[in-house]
Image 1 (cartoon, each protein chain N blue to C red):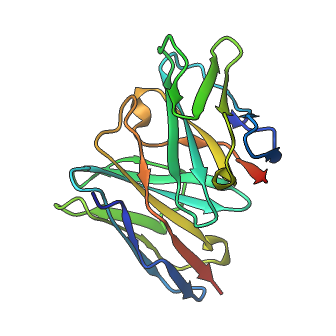
Image 2: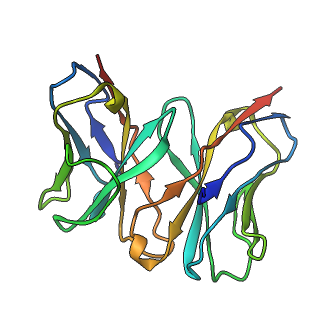
Length: 114
Length: 116
């Protein structure tokens, strides 16, 4: 069974640009969530999508957005990049979102903003 | 106040020894879930173990067990018989309440180093 696939794995952008990251969940998983990991702030929840609807959102500015497609694949977009957006962006999928539903994470997309 | 506190930035252990990684949490919601994840240098988060707030028994998964002390709000991870491959960052996380969905709150992590 294929795991969670994130592309690209590494990317470098400059301030002011925008970036789109992609996530393919485990087959059959309908929930996709995104996390940002930085040395200073640690792991922080960005948002969650279920059946193409955003169900939950973390405390991030509107420059961070996402969407989910009918095949459960998800993308997140960051516009007007800032130096502080440099981070490892992790996508996770799960069958549901309650109780013991476990999040399975991808390997992440490491974004460097210059 | 921090919701998840991991007080040990780094831990060092020898192969085959047991190690306990500390985690305390703070919530007023009676329904919550606690998770432990391992993050090797490759970056991928690997699920280790889960404990629900209403679970009567401590969770166990192979060499991993969770020492759940509800009154003290602690959920320590115990790794028995450490292996070199256990060297990684370990994160404690909480799902706070049924409305949290997949929004886990993570601690800052503990780096575990296993030597031969």
